[in-house]
Length: 83
Image (cartoon, rainbow, N blue to C red):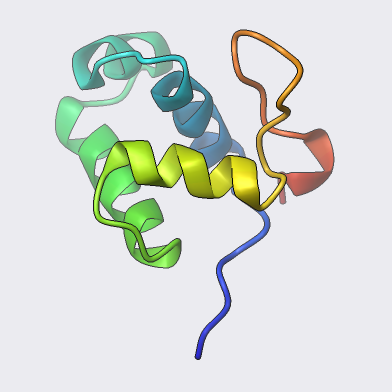
């Protein structure tokens, strides 16, 4: 059985932070200067890597794995989890 990743690329970390904050795909795309499809691609790849079926589960898994800092808002990925 493959283990879930414990680090993210810089771009995936930014997308994860926006998802955890509840931002919509178009908002994330505008803020990060990506296409909507580009954001969806990264989200779907993260969902595959973390073996989850939706964005809510993706964020929950990130908190469970210690990737997102639980004590801050808006959500932030721990710097040591960015590769």
